[in-house]
Amino acid sequence: MTKHHDGSSGLTKEELSFIRGKGIKVLPIFTVISDTLGYEAGRVSARNAVFHARRLGIPKNTAIFANIEPLFQVDAQWIIGWVETLLPSGYRSGFYQYPVKGEFSQAYCQAVKENNDVAANAILWSAEPDSGTTSERKAPRYNPITPNCKANVWVWQYGRNAKNCGINTNLADDRVLSPLN
Image (cartoon, one colour):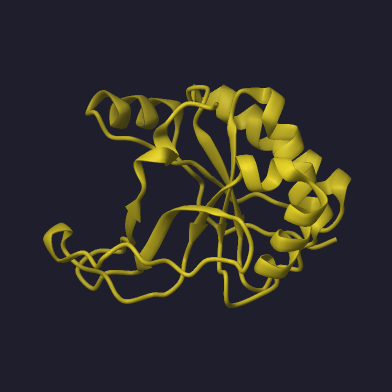
């Protein structure tokens, strides 16, 4: 078993309330994932993500994105476990992932073949290509790299680690904020 964590402590309930009070939308990324292999590990990660989303007051119908970094070993069963566990929770399933680097795309497309709920319900947040950070006015045309199978790639991180401050730049399709069907 491998432990995955990006080192961030995350936002507090008070910080999230302040941000939402300013009309800012939040797309939570769950980074404390201990294992990305196997169905039961996917279910455990999803249950933990739901617990923390509820604890923090994240509204229902919000997508919770599992952070799948390129160095992670991930398989189709883990992805299916994540999606199937989030479906009845009222939260939407998502994956922050690298479609070219690492194993995610292959595992995701296998999961799509095995379970229609994955293609229908999972939202992908692509971290590729990285064209560099920009101002909002100079953002590129929406063009993330997608897996070679049916996928709802509705968020694209096109730039990371801006020079003036440590932010990443993203573009998103409005569907990522729409309620579940």
